[in-house]
Image (cartoon, rainbow, N blue to C red):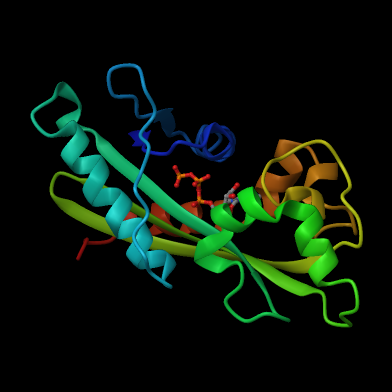
Length: 197
Ligand code: ITT
């Protein structure tokens, strides 16, 4: 199955490709007139609501184009830090761009609880049917930025299922084995075999 991934984030496409190509599917970026979509994110505290809004925007971008027949996929992800419930959560992009990784490390400086998790909601629309899935990756926030791989919060996120390294210290294959994105995509593929809602 060929999936068009509507996202402005090419790292997400690379990671989805690393998994889906192994499973016999192809994923390509959705480009409109050569550009990646630039979504307006709604004011919402819910990843699913944000993902639904991205889907609506993606569908309106491909309406009446030759892309209309393809499966279109979107996702919304966020980092959730236990010490600050819901934070940065759906505001992960904003927080990353404003206080950044150093700001998060400073906020947690005196904290004894560094637990956190990444969450992803993925939605796929194909032939007027919709499938949805979510994935979680539990871990902790490191005390310093470590590693050069990955993107976003990866230099400060240590997955529980790993070997104590941050995601940024792992290569894409290692991250893809245990990431929130992988769990969400696998769930989506499983549900694609079932009748859609
Ligand atoms: P689209 O909305 O266009 O898909 P985005 O980068 O804005 O791209 P999100 O809103 O889903 O995507 O991501 C929110 C933030 O979380 C953003 O700063 C990302 O860099 C970060 N993020 C998402 N997935 C991540 C991952 O696997 N590793 C590290 N950071 C991640």
